[in-house]
Length: 132
Image (tube, rainbow, N blue to C red; front, side, top):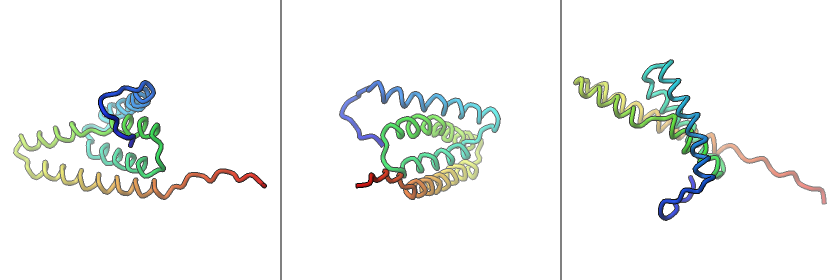
């Protein structure tokens, strides 16, 4: 994750990287919703796994902006997950609401941990050694 900067600063390259990742992420989220219906659990767990994987890789701030914050941030959906839980609660279905919350948290944490550990196992290629 890029280091926090004091105050609000919009660096053009950073802004473009986040936007370039967010657009395909949002479009993918929209298409998944059209074809799979309200699949917040699936989308959020897969997004957690991908973000975990990216975070486990060697540091690359531009990649994190593009794919982590931009793509994963727009393809996953906290607000839709909460709305689904509220709809269950408003219908009086506490078991479904608590099940959705618990299952998403448990699977999401597990997926993020798995992705993170997979990312950490990848090592960058060794630079070629010049003969001396």
